[in-house]
Amino acid sequence: MFWVARGVAVRITRCWRDDVLTDQVLWVKGMKTFDSPFIVLVGSLVVQWLAGYGGDLLRRKVRPLRKETREDFETVQNATLTLLALIIGFSFAMAVTRYDQRKNYEEAEANAIGTEYVRADLLPAENATGLRELLRKYLDQRILFYLARDEGEVGKIDVATGKLQTELWSAVVRPATTQPTPVIALAVSGMNDVLNAQGYTQAAWWNRIPVAAWALMGLTAVSCSLLFGYGERRTSVFVLILPLIVSISFFLIADLDSPRGGIIHVEPHNLISLLRSMPAH
View (cartoon, rainbow, N blue to C red):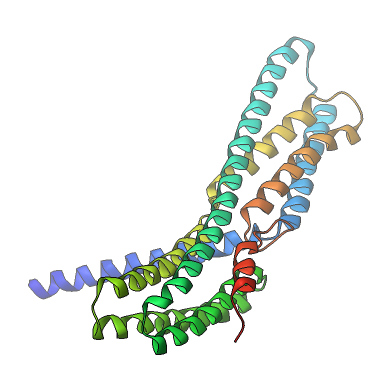
């Protein structure tokens, strides 16, 4: 009986892991779509225009909007437009917050690396020289991380960064083990801040607007375009105005939310400034 229960538990665990991995793969594929704000702009514009044009055809050829129902229709239309404006406003605030967070962590990384570079003087001379050289290489990789736009290049940078982190930690652990003094402990603490700063940065770059939020915005926008087209009594070209405005808003949100795509990026100004301030050897 024990082995049967154990086998069932293993199967359940495997199924749970498979579901988690599947959800992660779908999440990554979904987020790649929003890494290209121009695709978001064109795609949302086309879909919303088709919805608006479909609403216009529905009013003109299938079910005309009567005068006695226009007032109620306009109430629903205005409420839907207000809901769309609120969703776009909240999403824009989320994107700006995440963008600011990435900028703040870039500054924090520069401060942590600069502090550890100075604290290298607390180590014995032979260890301090090697630590400073490793910090320069590590700083180069962190700058490349912010400037990289290709995912393949980012993978190579992550591998190199991981190796350097191991070497950096070993560079401060060895003298700390040999001479466990409070002064050397400061260098170990500073290195811990350097490694933690990179982890916080990576978490901030993964922190994106959820796909479900994008789906809600898109569904609301399509509904608004459909209602706008159905209630509009002018030319069909006029139906393009709302989709154009909303698509531009989606473009801006996607651009701010995407760390590497689009035209708005977090530039490593603090890291580059720190690199220039380090004496060359």
